[in-house]
Length: 249
Figure 1 (cartoon, rainbow, N blue to C red):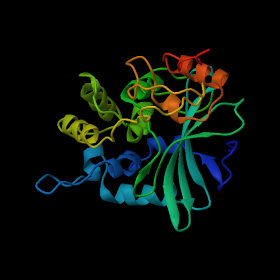
Figure 2 (figure 1 turned 135 degrees about the vertical axis):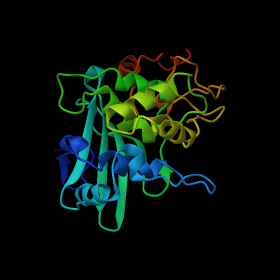
Figure 3 (figure 1 turned 30 degrees about the horizontal axis):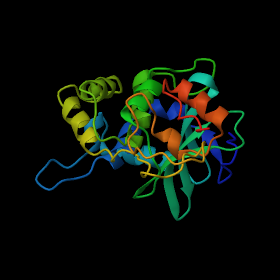
Figure 4 (figure 1 turned 90 degrees about the horizontal axis):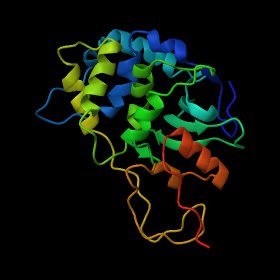
């Protein structure tokens, strides 16, 4: 598998691993911080056991075959989750790709700490519900939502968010009697929303804009990516978002 601008290692299609016992605990436990006085996060939260999780980790962390999970959506865009298995520099990279772009764009990386803007709940939900069946990758809504959930960077969530995550967890095999608690835990451990600083230049207009918060119909991630006006407008449409402000004349 090739991704333009991502030449670090031997990428292989990882979608088959979604059906393997131990995958979801491997993918989501890093999002589950342990708080003293609370139950320690465990693979059983996701319907797995420790042996399954350990066995699947050997596959996910193979330095000779780096699993990549493609999440195609509108306009030829794809979010891609890559297990970056560099010896001594393991991490998980979340990328955004489009065939006509000269290179991938970075959404976030995790190697014990998080780097990058992430995505709002609005964008994650929109991508999860808008698969592109003409492109290879993950098309199941629940799997798409949970693959992208570690990207969540949002200060306020809509009331339906816990129910959506609960339902997705149940679909992938999490115990029904504890799925809501697991969903609540995952959502509590999200990152703060991505922001652009007041008064910084728009990446497209070259002019100063003073407001710091995206409106409810604007994707904050558009401000963080190094895109042309045409690319940004196409991505905004794919995300169901309002385009970035046009340059002032």
